[in-house]
Image (cartoon, rainbow, N blue to C red; front, top):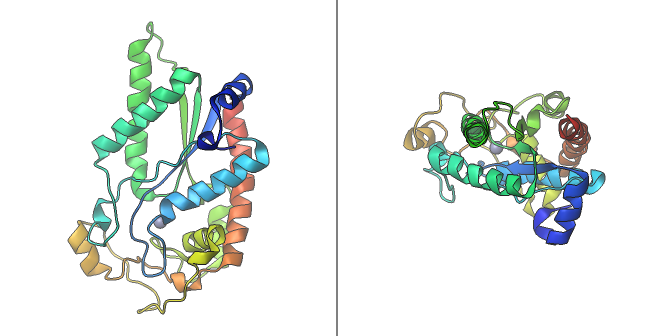
Length: 248
Ligand SMILES: [Zn+2]
């Protein structure tokens, strides 16, 4: 069940049985020579929508632009300043809260978003507390989960790609997007086969250190079958965790 594909009476009926919503959140940034710019938003979106279909969970529109400043030397990347992202997340949450949602589960696809998402949660809780009559127990609760940290998923990715998983433009995340969008499958020879690793500084420095955008990875190993395995396991883990959060 997707919010943007629902009517308002359907959302009203959903709210009568659940106050919880699942929101995919990610980034629009370069993902190496064979990965889609939308990878970090598409991975949580693909997993969330399947979970929504299987378990009757309401899935919100994807928050698909995030903290991508250090990828800005690669064409197509779009980034938000942290203050802009926090402001936008606050308005999403305030809108949902206005309708009665009390549990916002954010499934994240981008490591660079984590600090800003947690800062946004803190702003939301402050707003609730300052609004209320002195209670510091807000009737709004947020949960952040990075999809690759759902129970069992990191191990599965390591089993599927014991060499060259790396940390950016990984074969796992590219596989997930190829499972969701098989037309995106393409064959690109990686040179060097496994990308270098190193510190992440500013955008130009990033491109000098990591000329094709990858960090430590060999995404030429990506394949649809691996993507299906990762998505299937992630959906199962997500449904269990979401339902526990919704009921708490
Ligand atoms: Zn990524």
